[in-house]
Image 1: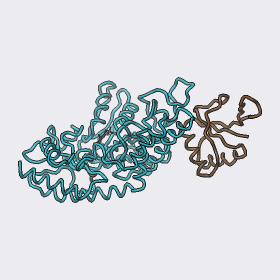
Image 2 (image 1 turned 135 degrees about the vertical axis):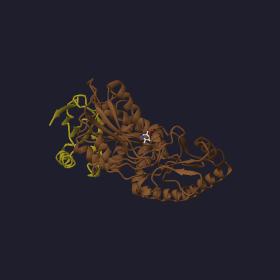
Image 3 (image 1 turned 90 degrees about the vertical axis):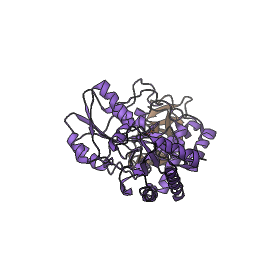
Image 4 (image 1 turned 180 degrees about the vertical axis):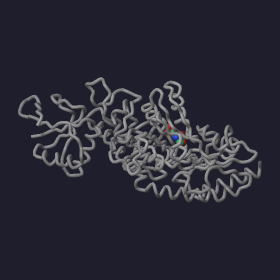
Length: 383
Length: 83
Ligand SMILES: Cc1ncc(COP(=O)(O)O)c(C=O)c1O
């Protein structure tokens, strides 16, 4: 067991006990592939995949679970949407706070399909003004891509507002919900979201190697991967129905088994309760940390407008030094540096050194916060 | 006599199973009989006397069916016919 874990924005830890049980049960008692055969082990595998899909759909408010596609992580879903929508000469609007899992596929289509990227500048606190998005929309704009919350500052983004705007302009919107799924309530039906990518292994509390892409009915992506689906096998053309259209190849059934158990846990606990808990912990953390000498806090100071992610720097110390001290002497795990988001660090003025990122999860406690604050106190005094 | 109902994807077969179970309809999932053309390798088998009710349940739940077949068990080879 790790000491104190504050790297939930990278991947959550620990996982609910039942996640481990479901994965163990799958390998001990099921083992087979899903969607391919009718013998009873294979049926059970298909059932596991179906049940997990239904749970995820319920969690995000999707009416039709076949619109939930299993991916290996948020990055894969983001690639599927970006590559599947943008064509030669299109324009895409994005923000200056995006993760490289958005920026790199965008740079790729910029180079290979002459796609024009329009980046909306966010404030130094990492906040986006929706009107700035509007100002960047042009006739050739074929996609708006935006994170639901920054993985660097924790700032929540006005995705509902921008989505309404996108609908007015009839432009599809892709939301990178890696940092909010499972931590902040989401209702894709109420908000009429078009395409939403998220990880299964972060806030959803599932294992690594899992992720989901929700695609609203009426939106078609050109698949980026073609192959066997177990359906339509007499034809050599990719099926056009979901989820098969986007799920070629053997699925990560053991991971999906774990994800199903994790989402079940969240449905029982309620995402709004996870949110309330993290908001409260963040308030305590902000309370203490923003009064510490030599500590700079990034992003908004109001826990209502942020997730459980906080970036700080300590005057006169490299983030990596602080990370090392916390790990070596206090057994506190967190992530320092650029967090795969150079654009975000440029926006908040912490490029290229980066920050010390504390990211909370549903299993963190006030005690964890106290341990961290005491450790930071000692480290800053000693420096 | 048994009837089988086909769907275009395993996802819908699974959905059908869940819906029928919740309505206490007894069913089995069987491999798609060779004589039937279906887009997916598994079909839902129910007693033919349940068929009307089953169709109603699927309609109510807006679950799209691909085809319905009767299994002729008298002949040695399992013959299926579209209902
Ligand atoms: C904002 C954001 N987007 C995308 C990702 C990529 O997620 P994954 O590692 O599941 O591909 C992450 C986390 O790494 C993230 O923080």
